[in-house]
Image (cartoon, rainbow, N blue to C red; front, side, top):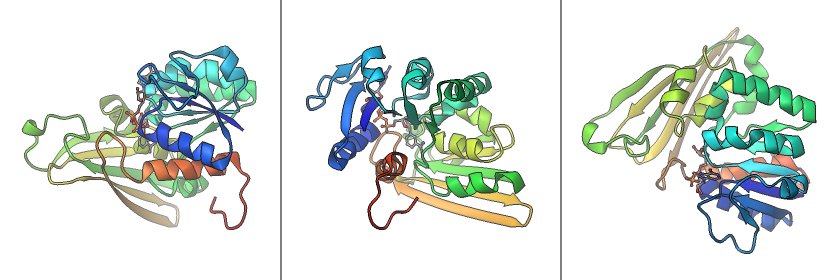
Length: 250
Ligand SMILES: NC(=O)c1ccc[n+]([C@@H]2O[C@H](COP(=O)([O-])OP(=O)(O)OC[C@H]3O[C@@H](n4cnc5c(N)ncnc54)[C@H](O)[C@@H]3O)[C@@H](O)[C@H]2O)c1
């Protein structure tokens, strides 16, 4: 398989190395801020020729970049994307679903920083409420640490609004909204806590005869991505590309 990368930062580099380890090929890296990628062709904007020879693009840049490049990608190949807050824009989500259908390509939604997205999607018909509380340091949330000297709720509202307010920090909320009951019914709470060095998420799901609570916490290594996501991203690539041998968790 030939895999292209839109964005080559923390997630992109980890997944590209894993693709090579699997024996698959990295067909290109599209990232205007990258000068060297171990001999992999680097482009600054979508290249129709490279896309035509690619099976799957992994987007790991940011929501606006996903939106700008979506049409060029989905015309040619499947897409696995991490910047899921882009889909809080209802017209973009509708367009994305229609375009994927029209071109016969998939949009893969990885579980990313959390667990249980598949289970939430499976139960979506009987789920009545979902709330997510994310606790991160002010720095991780892009807030001025001087303004946040103790733990405080900095957002409480719908996931759609949260995606507008914190587009780089609530991809987990967007993933849950996509899998479950949508961006308006899913409730988001964001806590800025200067005493933490983790990204923590509590997802509470209730429905007809079901109640789940999922707690996930992952150490931060700087930036928006915790230590767990690059590992989970490699697992998602394996499940997307298939070819498992032996014990496989799907
Ligand atoms: N779904 C999830 O659970 C989850 C978890 C963690 C991170 N994320 C999201 O995944 C994305 C990547 O995360 P990361 O930690 O690898 O970020 P990162 O900051 O390490 O990397 C982002 C890369 O995008 C590149 N970029 C910037 N503008 C670009 C453009 N116009 N075209 C192409 N590339 C461009 C940057 O140069 C950088 O290399 C972010 O949107 C992040 O919020 C999602």
